Amino acid sequence: MRRVALPSPVNVPASALLGVRWPAVPAAAGATALAIQFQLQQYQWWSADALRAHQLTQLAELLRHARATAPFWAKRLEDRDFDLRAPLTWDRFERLPLLTRRDLQDHEGDLRCRRVPDGHGPVFSTSTSGSTGQPVTVHKTEVANVFWRAITLREHLWHQRDLGAKLAMIRYVRDANAARPPRGARQDGWGPSTDWAYRTGPASLLAIRSDVKAQAKWLQRENPTYLLSYPSNLLLLARHFQRGDKPVPPSLRQIRTMSETLTPDTRRFCEEVFGVPIVDIYSTQEVGYVALQCPDHLGYHVQSETVIVEVLDDDGRPCRPGTVGRVVVTPLHNYAMPLIRYQVGDFAEVGEPCPCGRGLPVLKRILGRVRNMLTFPDGRRNWPVFADDQFVTIAPIRQYQFVQKTRERIEVRFVADRVVTPEEEDRFRALINGRLGYDFDLVFTYHPSIPRDVSGKFEDFKSEVEPLS
Ligand SMILES: [Zn+2]
Image (cartoon, rainbow, N blue to C red; front, side, top):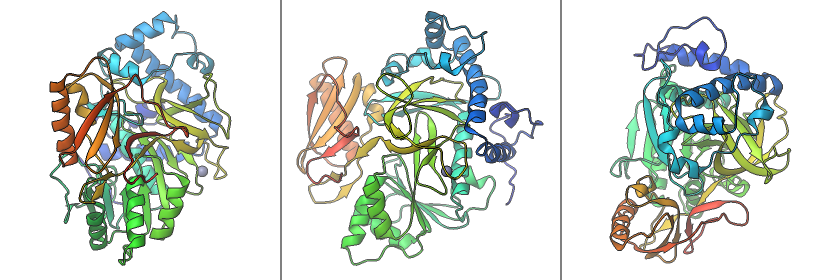
């Protein structure tokens, strides 16, 4: 392992972050990340009870900070007469009301902390519509970012990847003109999560909006060892390789999926076609990593060092192993906009403790977003990107869903706070078609709410042309 001296974007002793009284470490980002990694390696083997006790200490800190600095939490905790001087118990915590996406939409300003502790670094924001097509904006600190990177590295280490090998990524790229086929984009290393400590191999990137045929050609030329993409895109690629006469890239050793629900059928089919295992990741943009696939089993281990995950039934009670409930999370390190008992919008099945021996709780499967692929009139297909992060700049859109009716026409279903004017619809048309890259006939319809399908999945883009799932 090669240690790299990096400039220090954050000045946070790891001891403060995980609440453990370790000797202070040098403030360089690399050293901090190394210390966190060391701690994570220890924590994973703690018992479930010990991890929970530790979380409770972190949680009390977070609640105190939230109450003192964020008007929303000051009011909510005061309204409930929540005494933070009394010892915090799980029972008390679990009586706090859930925080909904609607709360985030309505109270973004008041959910933000008026001050962030020294050393938590600058604050940045991210917008996402998550699993249910409901756009929200979340503010995070650099420390939350440090943990994002630490868990990224943990995931690589868990799955024993050869960090010197080549990584290919087919994923969302914000700049519509970047990483396009046929070449895509190249970078020297895998990214900041790994590169501070390891001499990683080359990485190449292709924008997810690329047509699947172009993706397949690119993959063959790049011939990576590892591939990262989204399940629905991977399924389409697998079908393409299965039908075509070109072999899958021969160097491919493993595929990583993220951002959508990976169904057992998709996993099975893609593993068969590509001839390599898939490792799935459960993360959300608002929260960060929620759970990672166990290195030895198919279940997902909750990343308890950074997030509290509850899975609740319809009555708000914790689900038992084998039952499915709504996922409620509390990220432990975001001191810019604490999300306490935040209902992400996904559902999950609780798993039994993992035979691997890690004390990190288990989710057996996740029911989140499922997305169909967009079909263009000329038959090209890709994973659609809609610019949903900008919808609220045009009109107060609470939720959306797109349904492709024909190769030319797409129904845009909106839940809106008020009537959307024809002029605003024109602006939506320009924005959405600009992102999709074609002048589709967009038909707007308005609804009081947009439910999940009967299986509990939410499809933010459905296709009645050639649905995949
Ligand atoms: Zn395990």
